[in-house]
Image (cartoon, rainbow, N blue to C red; front, top):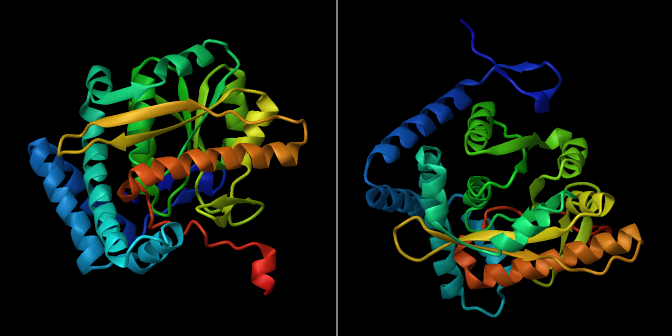
Length: 316
């Protein structure tokens, strides 16, 4: 029987046949999830950190990009410091992959016990207003545990999920989020899905730090303009809802424990959509920069955040 993966993001009713490469990738992922899921947590975390180290130091997967991005963000730090942060960033990705493998096995009580959630009561109070709440996070720390902890705490949360080239990975990740109590809004449906979620008084969570290839707004990020998606600001402004920013930062040590700090995002709303969009996204990036400085090795430097350049730079 031929296997296909159906996905709305690739077209209504379209079925995508997995390639041999994608099947092999998913088989490796499934084996790693099984193997690292049955060994004691401490050993699993150490092994995965070692795999991350190999990817960053020996294979040097996107290592040139990582070092270039760290040089842009931290020009005053020494090359040795940036190399150390780069190595640790790969180890961090390995450790957090283990968490994703093991997370679906944890009960809501187990998830909550592993997170020191600061600002939960403020978030709960905002959600009680039935207006909906926009929650912005980023590729910092572990964004999956942040959403899982909110769901485990009893708050209704919908998360926007971006499609992946390997549809098996995508289906697996979306199913994991659903099992953890998070409803998934596919990126293609985000304009309607997020507003519908907010209109129902739910929390809508988005990652706001990805490079916008088209129609983005350029916002300073570590002193350099970065093309930023307008969506989070447009949704929040159109729904007139409170906005929170939060990140799940991994605590030191080999145990998988985190600190989540959720803050209300305050910015002046003038009624000018363009000005308010910039104000909100600028305030978000200021909080994000502060959080990254506190844990620079936990940011996803592998992403080409500054890839799209302003028209004036491209023309020069």
